[in-house]
Length: 138
Image (cartoon, rainbow, N blue to C red; front, top):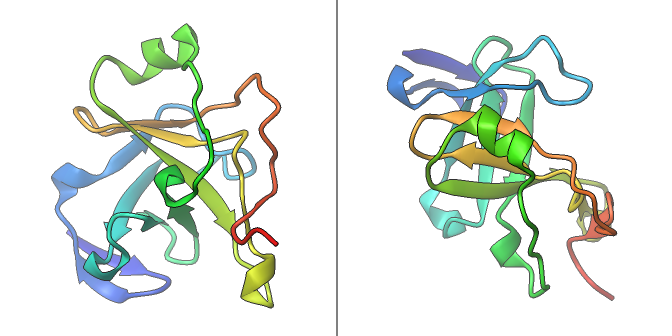
């Protein structure tokens, strides 16, 4: 499928790789299908969650393994039921600011993607993880 993107222009993207949100992102309820785009130069730590229906809707995601922190949680059963069984990947929504050193990620509400069926959800963790965790520590 031909996909219009905010950051990469028009690209070919396999329709079979489209991610479907089983529960919409907070504040973006009308957007249900996305493409997870990666660049080989980012070594798996950075991806773009691009809406398939609106090229202006795109979220920069960061793999939590990019941070040297203890980021562990148990996924509540109701999320597992919605996502189905499979191998999950975890991504953090980032907020890129000027200057870049002030950018943050949301540790409390990660994006969980079932790699086997393409279903995804934004989980709301019952934890003390911050919503605005600095990408760069002082």
